[in-house]
Length: 170
Image 1 (tube, rainbow, N blue to C red):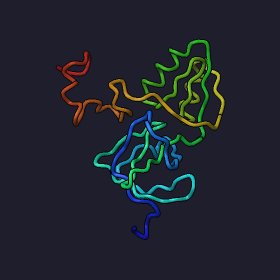
Image 2: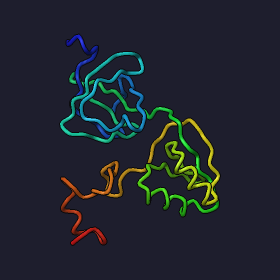
Image 3: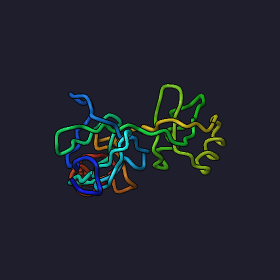
Image 4: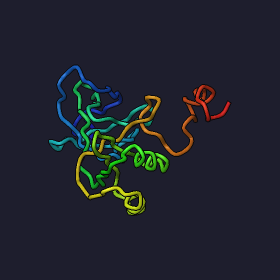
């Protein structure tokens, strides 16, 4: 075993739902759930190296498979958020999406990361906004590939999809 870790490395990501109970959990903020290679520490204080073949967006309930077969499940950490309520949530969600803000969409509220510019915009649109601290699990990408990253939605592996999506080129 390497001196830098307590557990064997993880090179495999298992997607939720898991079919076996995890050995431990790792609690990560939204911005920490996009990674390729990083040393993480479990809830019980054991370190391990994550070394995936590609950068991956992690969802609540996914797990790292350690080289010895044990699983370390990913849990969303509590973080400072804005809770958005109002009579026209679809309209408010549209404005947030137009600004590419990650958003957790629920039946009677939206959750976004704290941002004073978005808070002011939402207040001007008539939304009720208050600060909360909760786990943040925003909607993933529309094509089932996790997060959207900026305006280049169809670069890399997804480039061929652009020809099949109205409004995104040929």
